[in-house]
Image 1: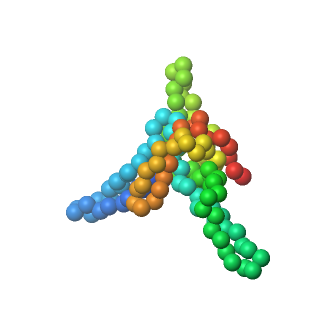
Image 2: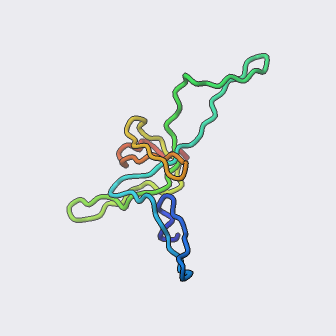
Image 3: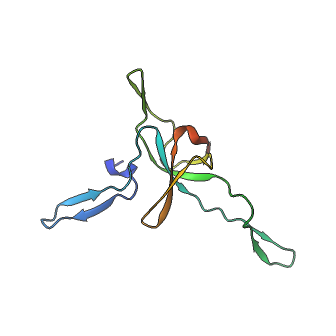
Length: 119
């Protein structure tokens, strides 16, 4: 794993003298986790074959982990998080901070707001 793979929107740029520089947009701190919302299709098909989009139905709070902070210090020791990049998780819906980077929507949540890992 490259050092920049745990950051969101890491972009590779070349300078005038052809050196590669990586520009990083988001790096979670402490026990924060960055999530990318999973698109869940919620539609119903009628008996005659008409597809109805469900707009009033509450969407599940499932997202993919794209970046994990280093953890928190307790009694002078770093306690890392059990959550790994690439996992799908269930999170508390109203405990998120929403941001957009490069047209994609991400959520930043505390590790305490993640309720379960979907396997």
